[in-house]
Image (cartoon, rainbow, N blue to C red; front, side, top):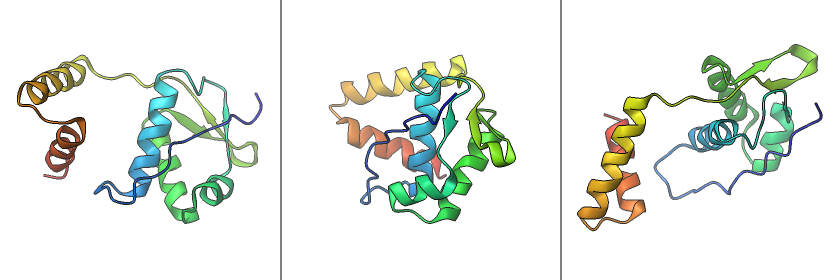
Length: 123
């Protein structure tokens, strides 16, 4: 398969979420929903870092974490390829739905609910 267009959203520099995590989540989401299908070749670490204005080591960390999660495989000179779709455990999906429902009931915005989740993530 040819090089897959990654087409990531701009990074939020005001977010408390580090850039590597923003990129990792976006790539994992695109793998999970099929926008980056199995077999797709991702840009090199250098190319993606240049496109995003990030350090090479930042993107290398993203690829290493995606590989640890079983979403991509690095094949030396052949590059990094998507191995499959992310699967979200049922319990996590249900907890996310419950958080969304409670946040809406409390009148929170998506940004406020996301901030709460990020705070809980770092504890």
